Image (tube, rainbow, N blue to C red; front, side, top):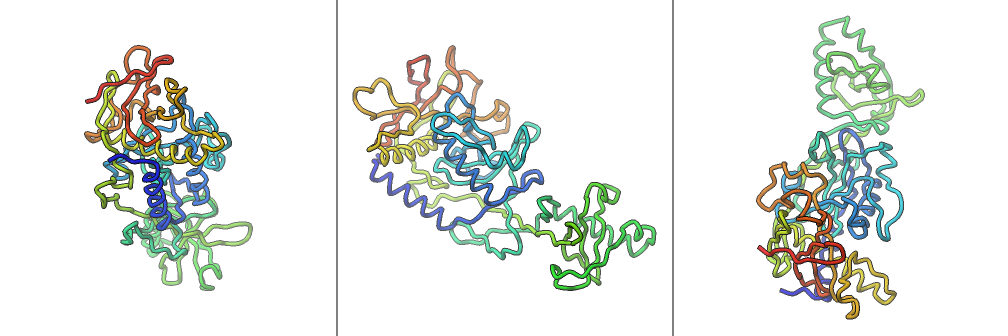
Length: 398
C-alpha cells in the first residue's frame, strides 16, 4: 500500500480528531513532584517541536521502548527531557524546567510519532520509572479510554500547596495514631491535637493530628501539614496551615490506563499507518527493527504534510533533504533515526523488537546519530542510510 499525500492528509486528520475527541487535561506526579495539566501541555508543545526540529547532533529527542512502561509493543516512542537541544528553527525556554528549578531534570515527556502525549517518566538509578497520571477528586471526572470504557482509578495522594503526600503513607499514619491514641496519654500529648471549625470541611468540628511516620512524628519534616479527622475519628482528609488559616489539601486520584489494542489492520495499536516494504536493517553492528523504522516513517510523513502546506513560502521543516537531488526538486530526503538516550537502556530486557541494539558506533567513522531513513514526498520508504562525511551509504536490509 502506497500512501500518497492526499491519503496521508486524511489519515492524519482522522487520527488527530480521534485523539482530540477523547482528550482531557492530564497532570502527573513524578517522584512526589507535581506537574499540572498546564505545565504538561506546554511541555508537550516543546516536545513536538523538538521531535520535528532538534539537531541530529543532540542525543534528544531519544527513542524509548514503551513495551514495559506503557504496554505498547508495536511502536517506538520518543522521550524529550525537560531541557532539550534547540537546534534548527526551534528556540525558547521550557516551562517544566523552570518550575522544577533543578540543574539536572530527570523527568521526560513521552510522545508518539504523531506528537500525542503518552505519559511522563523519570530516570532513577539509571532506570526509567513511569510517573503517575492524576486528577483531582473534586473534579468529579469519569475517566474513559478511546473506546469509551471506564479506566480504573484509585486514591493516590494529597496535594497541599504544591507538596505531595502519598495516600498510603497518610492512611498508615492515621491507622497507627488511631490505635495508639486510644491507649496512651503520652502519645496523645505528642500528637498535639488541634480543634478547628472549617467551611472547607463542611463547617464541622475537625481535629488535626500530627503526621506520624518512620517511627516518629513528622513535625519538622512535615511542616504545617496535619491529618484531619472528625469526632468519630474517621479520616476526612489532610490540612495545611497558610498564615493563620487551615486549608484543606486537594485529594488526588491516579489513573491506570490499559494498553492500546489494534482495532484496524492498516494501523498499529496507537494509530500509526503500517507502511509498505519496511523490513529490519543493519548498519555495522546496529540493528533497527521494522517497528522502529515504521514509527520514524510516521514522524517524517507528518512533517512532509506540514511542509506541503508551507511549500508556497518555501518554508521547509524537513531536517535533511537529499543533496544528490538538489537539481531535481525536494523529492527525497533523510529523516534521522532517534536512538536510545543512554547505552544502559539496552540492558532493560527489551522484547525481540528492541529499538536499538549494538554499541554506540556503526563502523569506522560513522557516529551513532548519523543514521537516517530515506523516503520520498509520497511517503514511500526507500531504505536506511548512514552518513559518512558528505556521503550517505546504504545499510544492509535483513
